Amino acid sequence: MARLIAFANRKGGSGKTTAAVHVAAGLADLDCRVLLIDVDPQAHAGLWFGISSRENRGRGLYRLLTAEEKSPLSLVAKTGRGNLDVLAGGPGLTEYEAENSHKRGAVYELARLIAPYFAHYDYLIFDTPPTVGLLMLSVLTATRWILLPLPMQFLAMEGLAEMVRLLYKINASGNKSLRLKGIIPVMYDKRLKISSNIQKEVARVFGDKILLPGVRPTVKLAEAPSFKQTVFEYAPACTAALDYRRLAKHIKELRGAGEDSVKRTE
Ligand SMILES: Nc1ncnc2c1ncn2[C@@H]1O[C@H](COP(=O)(O)OP(=O)(O)OP(=O)(O)O)[C@@H](O)[C@H]1O
Ligand SMILES: [Mg+2]
Picture 1 (cartoon, rainbow, N blue to C red):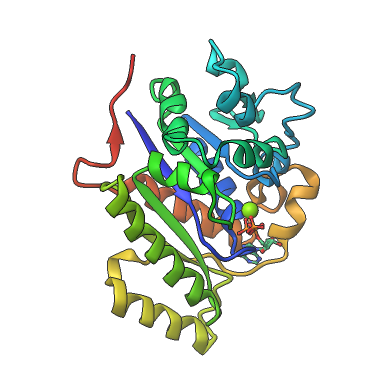
Picture 2 (picture 1 turned 90 degrees about the vertical axis):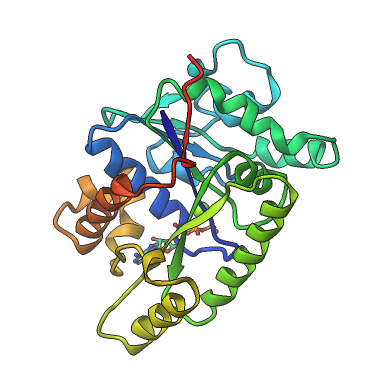
């Protein structure tokens, strides 16, 4: 059974890639088989591990979407961390989006093409771009759970509201199973009043259960990718390493009402 989780927020720079990378790596360290799918032309999630679709000889998501590849597993890159593989993003995805946005049914293609991975992984984790286009809509059509990293700043609430409006549209237009499963307070400092005020507001609107364990701010997160490492290797004792480990464990224990898993195809 593979569980599909998208990290998404309409606000740019809100910590989506950082969260997707660390939750993926954290779940892999908990003995889960994880495929991190980088649905972003910026390709930051793959680059975090030193994987770019170009250096990767044209493998990655672009090829999956465009080549009717006979062996989709061959498009996946190893990160060198036991159970964690990456399907790289890259600039070709912008081209894919431009060429296919107006094609009928294009939004269902990603869901169809990732199905062969279900039997090989426990988690498919999607990193998404901040813009709403074919790429983002394809992820929201394919997945069941959205996790939204929410920076503890008031303007970030706007990104949350926009994401919820988009979610309702997707629920109405096809994927009724899509849920905002959790909100992750990031850049979260419990000493600051703004952090607790935002959390109270989120809990008031969505209920307590939606709030997942938060991630405190640290510059280590910005430094780690230049060493092609997660903070679990780069600074294992830093607050973000501890917080992301706790978050990965919490996410592993999350359950849906039977609607959150996809049956193996093999
Ligand atoms: N908990 C945190 N504490 C401090 N800095 C953080 C935290 N999470 C993310 N950051 C920093 O915020 C910046 C943006 O993070 P990230 O690239 O993950 O955002 P994003 O939402 O993926 O951006 P984009 O919309 O461009 O894809 C990075 O410099 C990252 O190091
Ligand atoms: Mg990103």
